[in-house]
Amino acid sequence: MYKYLLFTTGIISCFLTEINAQELSKNFGDLASFTEIHAYVAVDISKRQGLNSEFDPHELYLNASSRISQNIKAVAEFEIEHGGQLLKMTKLFSEWNLDEKFNLKVGLDFAPFSVQDQVYYSPLRLRKFSSHATSTREILPTAWRETGLFVFGTFGDQQKIHLKYDVGVFNGLGSEAFNNVRDAKQSLDNNNNKMIAGRVSLNYSKHLQVGASYSMGKYDDLDQLDLKMWASHIIIQKNKFDLIGEYISSQTTDSVRTKTKSGGYVMMGYRFFENLLSDKINYIEPIIRLQIMESDLNVQDANDFIGYAFGFNYSPAEHYKFVLEYEVLKERFGQQIDNNLVSLEMVIDF
Image 1 (tube, rainbow, N blue to C red):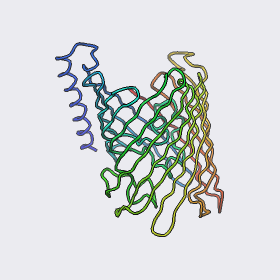
Image 2: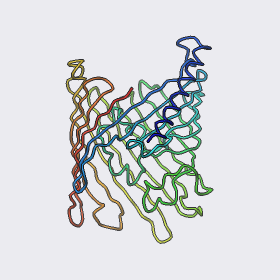
Image 3: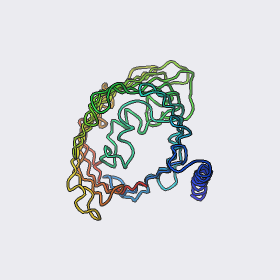
Image 4: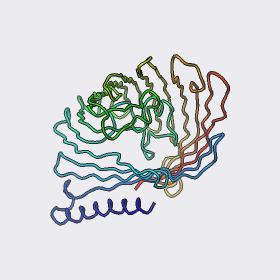
């Protein structure tokens, strides 16, 4: 733990040193003057049937970004999980904003697939629950980030109907993709093949988004076995109401057969009492999520289930919330397993 504290302190010290250096040479308010530092902390207590209850210092994120010119910026981000048990770099890229229709990003960031970049981080409005839908853990690896080359842009008036696209070429998932896609994430490439992913969405202002994603590549060490993934999504945001829906499917081939997975979820929330009492209630938001999971179309077992979750978010002040959740999983085949979850999470960003 001591070495993690030293490492984190060193990171922050470097950022602060950079801020001081830039303040000497730039005027206040210049886009190139300051390095911005943001962080958030999530701590939870949870109990899943059959397992011990536990308090978990779940995650600490440190994010720093700085513009070196009006259209070029650099971003670095680190995550410390479970009280220092896991330390990893989650973002490290440069972004060159050439034009609204064409922008270039080089480095480590979310793969341009599904809506993970809009729902993953705990403080985000569209992150309703402390747990993730199973399809975003078992079909798509949670927080799927890759190192590579990315281009993205927007066509049309962003206050009206417009089209967004994201395309990336990157290292891709590794040799464990057939058995457990979560273990297939890798820092460096295990073969010569480069994975390709793309996402396109049709949007109406900030209220409606309908999109689709596709990804393909070779995942084994010998560049022979295929991994393909598809996804579609919808996001509706209207005043105090949010709805997020997503369907994900994958096909993974090994030397014997092809495994097909599919699953999806819909989750909703509505904010009540917004800004009612500034020092006690920022909002209260009842939330619900429905999901379905098919782990292998050729196998019927306890990994195929229908689930639902409900709870509420309570925010006493901006950038501070509590998430109470109860999740129920109903196995579609075989014996029912006692694996329901209850959790309470605190999230604060600063």
